[in-house]
Amino acid sequence: MKILVTDASTVTNGDIDLTVLAKFGELTLRERTTPEELIPLLADCDILLCNKTQMGKREMDAAPNLKYIGLFATGYNNIDTAYARERGITVCNAGSYSTNAVCQQVFAYILDRAARVRDFDGFVKEGGWMNSPTFSAFVYPSFELDGKTLGIVGYGSIGRAVANVALAFGMRVLVFTRTPREDSRVTFVDFDTLLAESDFVSVHCPLTNESAGMFDYAAFKKMKSSATFINTSRGGTVVEADLRRALDEGVIAFAAVDVLTTEPMSHDCALYGAKNILFTPHVAWAPLETRKRVLDIVSACVEGFINGNPINVVNK
Image 1: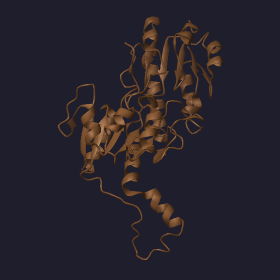
Image 2 (image 1 turned 60 degrees about the vertical axis):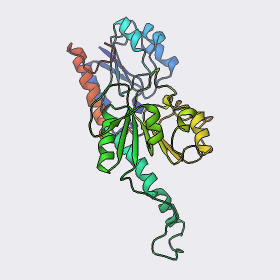
Image 3 (image 1 turned 30 degrees about the vertical axis):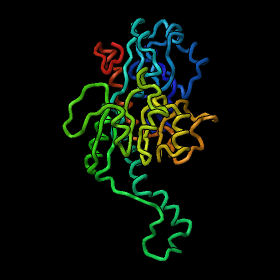
Image 4 (image 1 turned 90 degrees about the vertical axis):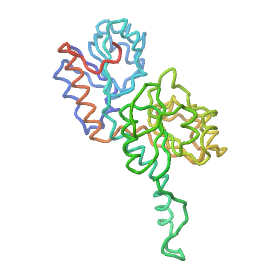
């Protein structure tokens, strides 16, 4: 088997050894691969492993020997899974590897908003506490999470983990999901109800034709003016110009985003410079333990495929 890893630098900066994949065949590791560079590399490729590399009809037609595509990711919107099925190419993702990491990132945002830790730290470092007339400087409003409402859009493994933590904080949890679920601890509601009643809205659904652009200006207008919007799923679920408008106009109070439609952030990103927004550069999934876990899952998926027992297949 000839194995090609197209974007190794999206998984490791040297702290994880991807050469363990060589046990499955002749391994080619590339830190990054442009679309133009990819086509000739596919000519004799049997197994392709990637994170964000686009694999559509053009790419698959350039890979006559391709039998398997494995993802260092849960989302697979960068792969034309229908055409892969037509071509007899098995596509497997790394489901549930990032649940703990993304959940903790969501609550890093929520706790930052509630306790204003970054703001208070800046106040102290700028000498504010030294000049305070009292021992406790109430310069930023803070609040308890107990009794607040968290709306979760999408209720897969990450959505459920976020709900678990929210319930531990005493929060009320609303869920909107197109996939029927059962969980007596939370309340399943329609999309508009979730928007109207939530103090925090956190997105945990895959990017599909149905979810693309679901958070537009009309959706933000249905939220509380005091609400916080959080996106750690996919940037394409949001109309970025509409979120910018909602923030700048005070339609919602705050946003925290880890993902954008174009990554890395483009120079003309609509959200850059928006009011009351916190950015992280698509790192919710990136703790060392998480990336080690995804490599283990990818390895297990390749082994299962080679042995005739593929797991995590997304294009059956």
